Length: 419
Image (cartoon, rainbow, N blue to C red; front, top):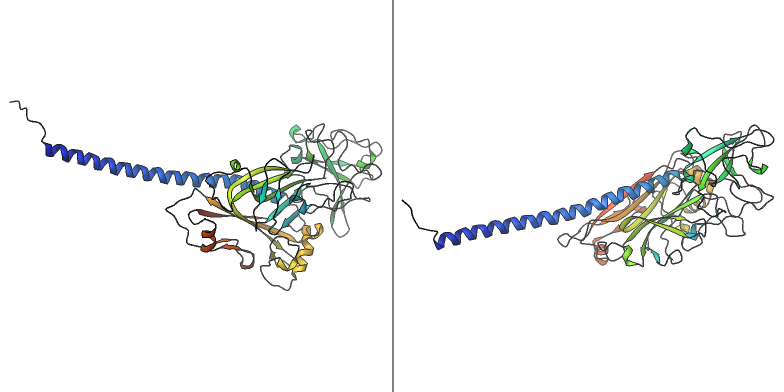
């Protein structure tokens, strides 16, 4: 038999109620998944960005001192480093028309402040209280030439062309700019790399011809069978004819650009900036900015020194003009003035610097109004060398609703005598 009976009103109401409940539960779950996915994605973006940028930082630290002149002939050559503030604070080159000092492999500054408004239309303001680090070596540049080297043996009158490697990609090209170092060994085993140049001419600090051919200027050729000259690339042919300095330089610092479009909108609005790597331009001494890590609140640099050559390590913070302000990790009878003197001496840095630690405080993900950071954040791991942000400081900066991560880099520079 057929029936024409349908659903009752009560049945429809119950069914609709169940459907609505299911939709609400599903919607809430989906929204929660979407929110957590967004947080996770932002966090992973920060982590990936950190890994890529900081590996470049680590590489440059390991290269500190590579191909760097350790001594000059007489008269000393003229060379120019950074022409803009505050980067010029760490210059060893004295400026146009003036002889420069032998360069330091590492130069730093404790809490350097200032702004560069001359390199671009954007002003870059160094975050107060953060450390500034300059690394000097031929290999800390992005040019292909800066990743190459070769050697030149004595061959008597007339000279010879530098060595050619079997892999053509490893050889210098026609207009590459290279410096020449005379590597000499003393009876005590000490090695000194002296920059080779024509002392009677215009003191050109690089090989002034084709680095693949015989050099006509005898000043750039070994003078006896015991000499071997080493050629290190500095720049490619798109560099102006004259190198401004016989090496490359990469500066690392945290700055906040005045152009807000350069700062991600997700960064905490107060007292955060971008970790930059900036090469010094040979053409004019200005900075070529490369952003490495966004939403950075702090960077602290720590040096490990073997002051007496006995394996006992003392740690210090970055350089300070007032030696009384240079923080030390322990007291082993060393005066702070000694640390300051070492950090001003290229030879002492080569002989006594064992490692460099860099601590970077960076934002992880976006602001999360449902999260509150109730624990202090410490940038470092040694009492007198750390920079701490207690909850009050986090609150004052508007950082309580952000997650923060401390990136730590520890490097033993490969090209220093001490390592």
